[in-house]
Image (cartoon, rainbow, N blue to C red; front, top):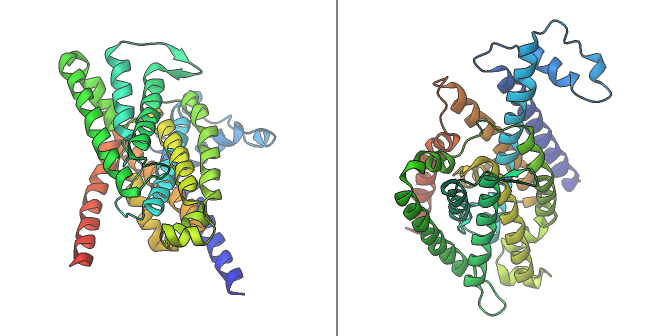
Length: 350
C-alpha cells in the first residue's frame, strides 16, 4: 500500500510539473516585442497539429503573428526546453554516479572540448553543412565527445575508472583545451566577439532545424538514463555495496559516461555553453522528491526545462531589442547557488 501511495505521489508531482512547463511555454510564446495573446498562441500551435488542427480557427489572427509564433518563438522555446531537460537529467546522473554534489555535465571537460571545437570552426571560416548540422555545431559536438573520450582514457586504471581520477582528469583536460582556445583567440582577434558570444550560450537565430537535430538523440538519451535509475540508487550506497547488490559498477559507469557525454555534446552543439543548470536544478528537484533516481531524473528534467525557458525568456526580453546570452542569466542564478553549496559542504565538514 505504501509503495502504491509513493507512486501516486510521484505521478502527481510529474503531472503538475508537466502542466506548469506547458503553461510556461505558452506564456513564453506570447511574450515579446510583438503583442500576442496566449489564446492566439494556442490557436496557432493547435492549427499546426495533425488531425485536430482543423478545429482551431486562426482566421482572425494577423498573418505576421502566426509567422512569429510558428517560426520564431516556438522552435526557440522547444529548443530551450530540450536543452534544459538534457543538462538537468545529466546533472542528476553525474551527481549520483560521482556521489558528489558539485558534479555537473561539464565536470569532465565536455564544455572545454565543445568550446575548442566551435572556436576551430569559427577561426577556420568553415561554412559547410553536414547531416543538417552547421560547421560550428558539428565541430562543437565532435570536440565535446573527443574531450570526454580523452578524459576517460586518462582516468582509466587497468579496467577500472576511479571517480576521483576521472574528476581530476576532467579538470586537467578542460584547462588544457581552454588554453588552446585562448591561444586561438589571441592570434585570431577579429573572431573574438563571435567566439565569446558562442561560449556564453544563446538560442538566438535557432529554428526548427536545430530542434529536429536534437529531439531524437535527446529523447533516446533520457530514456536510457532512466533505465539505469535503479543502478544509480544502488551506487548511492557506495560502489562496493552496489557491486554486492548485483550492479556491474565499472560497466555502468562507462555506459553512463557515454550516454551523458553524447546528450551534453548534442545540447552544447546547438546552444553553446550554458553553465550551472545541471548543477543547480537536480539539487532543487532532490529537495522536492528525494534522492530516488526513478523520480529524481524525470523531475530534474521537467524543472530544468522550466528554468531554461525562464532564463531564455528573460534573456530575450529584459533589455529588448538587445539580447543577453542566456548563459549570463543562468550564471546569475547559479553562481550564488554554487557558493551556497560550498558553504553547506564546508559546514558539514567542520
